[in-house]
Image (cartoon, rainbow, N blue to C red; front, side, top):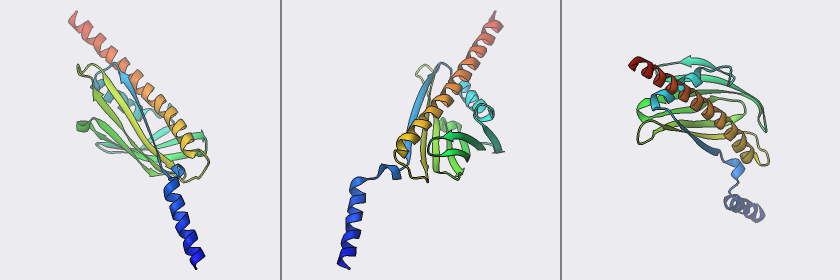
Length: 181
């Protein structure tokens, strides 16, 4: 009896001291500076939500300020192929879109935010993307791998928004210039 208690106590102490990082979700953050006003960035984010080909996703439900997406990911390290069902909620007054996992066979956490920040002159926008992610699967270096693949995906998404917002901004400026001439 004493041996069992001692072993249990020792196991609890070992777990609390080691703080096993593989059991915690991973937070990944990235940002990009966009040479466009916030309205153009909002428009680019809406375009991103609709782009089903570039990101293998599909809109499955849409309401006034939210959209439920089903997105397929292929050949991910540790996870393999997986499909995520998640909801994005737009909060225009807060300059953000929050997203949260509804269902996935392999991930137990996928949530975060797109956050827009104006420059002081209002002519540029910083777009921040934050994701908390975790999988049910236990694997060596799981968090390092999750961080790496999430970061790559974030970079692709941020570049998409930047390119579309800057293109729209240039089109708007060109249109304004032609109307004044």
